[in-house]
Amino acid sequence: MMNNIYLMGECMVELSLTSSGLLKQSYAGDVYNSAVYMKRAFSDINVNFFTAVGEDTLSDDMVETFQQEGVGTELVQRARGKSPGLYMISVDSNGERSFSYWRNDSAARQIMQFVSAENVGYLCMGDIFFFSGISLAVIAPSERDIFWHLLRKLKDSGVKIAFDPNYRARMWNDKTEAKIQFERAFRMSDMVLPGIEDLEQLYGFTELSKVQDFSSAFGIDELVIKNGSKSVCVIIDGESTQVEITPIDHVVDTTAAGDSFNGVYLGARMKGLDITDAVELAAAAAGEVIQHPGAIISKAAFSNKIKEVNDAITVACD
Image 1 (cartoon, helix red, strand yellow):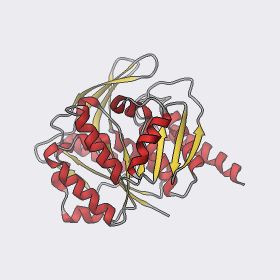
Image 2 (tube, one colour; image 1 turned 90 degrees about the horizontal axis):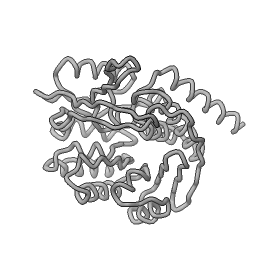
Image 3 (spheres, helix red, strand yellow; image 1 turned 135 degrees about the horizontal axis):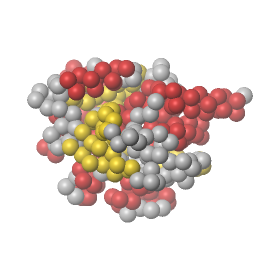
Image 4 (cartoon, helix red, strand yellow; image 1 turned 45 degrees about the vertical axis):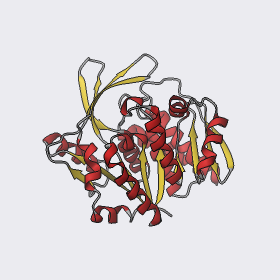
């Protein structure tokens, strides 16, 4: 059973408006959110974050927050003269969010400068290495070859590669650049967790069958296709499993829906849960997260939901 995962990405300062009109500060980022929710759901998994932060007091507080969440920080690097990126969330009446970013010179963009022999050695001890389309986008184009060499070394060392093609158009020069990088990631990944919404923006796919046909060329061992509130389709060795999920009536903020799903699904599979149970647990986690404001919700609300679904799975298996 797998028990050790490294996740690479960016954590930023998150600003969101409270009901009183004040700004609330917290920390978030797609891969970091997945790390937090995985650790909360599966406390015995060693969840480690590979990123770069600054040397300022805000970065100090950020790293302390990682540690409070139980996320390993031995590979959190310090980029001299840099600070974390920042973003602000605006949410409409349907819970859909829009973002304003200040991240072009963030510390996380320096992460490839810290791919040392020692750090690669740590990463090679993981069972899984997880990254996203945003993780790729923050790497300077001139340094992406360093990343691909790192990924090849990890794969050759027996580490399973997991990828979420989280696409943000503003982070790429054009769609062609993004497609080249994503398709390289598809070919090297053992597990891919795309959302149809992301692939629609990048490739124009609106149907599950189109995503399946496109993905079949890359030799992906486990393909997990998220289709919003409709369903999740998992394809392993050509065998397709469709898992229906219960839509949430009261949506507050969808900021970390996919991130929380990814973290809990990966953790569930690492712990040996079958496809259906893993999807149901991950979907329930995401369903709870979107009923609260912000990317990282309270531990109590999240833990209660995870326990409720785990208990239901246990009863169903008895």
